[in-house]
Length: 78
Image (cartoon, rainbow, N blue to C red; front, side):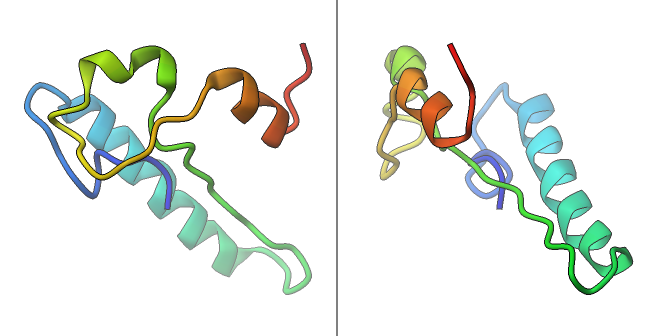
């Protein structure tokens, strides 16, 4: 599953929720169309520490993660 807002929507975030759900659904559907040896994943970093001050009361129960750490986890190079 990608994103948080398609599972736990908040006010004024309809574009984010629709985008999260579209990516999630795309990865599930395209997996059926790929040859059997190809795996399709979508990954969500939840919410970034750098923007956590905007979301804490709206997205409770999620642990924020620093973008630098997530970049390393997902192969981004700086």
